[in-house]
Length: 143
Length: 107
Image (cartoon, rainbow over the protein chains, first blue to last red):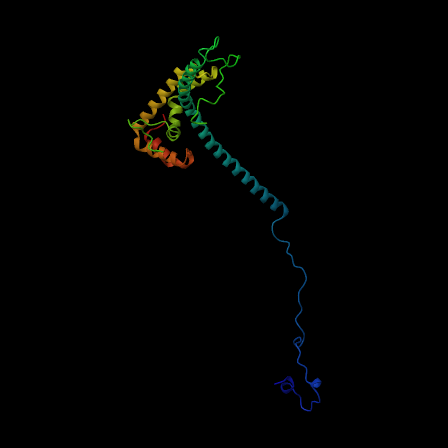
């Protein structure tokens, strides 16, 4: 039904005379609302916080140093292993190189045998030091 | 690619896994030959001049590998297999390393 049928008052002349139906405060009003700040002054002091943070930092840096020590020991182990096996690898490579070099010198003597005044092999640099051959042809399987 | 580390006659092949597995033993027991070879090389890098010392090094190392393989075959094969699997990373093979060094100790 319409609101007038529900909320009617006896002797009402128009809808504008209906009793009011409003949402309002309870009788006596609402209780007061607190809006004041209440931040407590307890807890650690500034010096205490500073010491705690710097203590944590120092302990963390100490752990970093310990970890670096461990990592350095691991790296040293790896390098020591490499130093130990370097001579055998170099010795094997030297043997292979010398046999290949002899073959190369024989080939050079064969190719240049009709060139007058050609000294076979070793006509590279004048400094007297041994330099590895710079041609890259001695390992055709690699290149 | 065989990770078995021995050739047909039972000698260990000096692959990278075998050499890094026995690197500590090589560094300890073949040190005089290694140092002599390196000094010769530093003096003159010509390969033909240091061939004899190189042969000393090869003889020492291959003999040492054969000796280790004969004394502690299973542990060495396990360690070499682990090295091969983890590409010569010592830290990932500690268990096999300890077993190997217990049977073939570094003196």
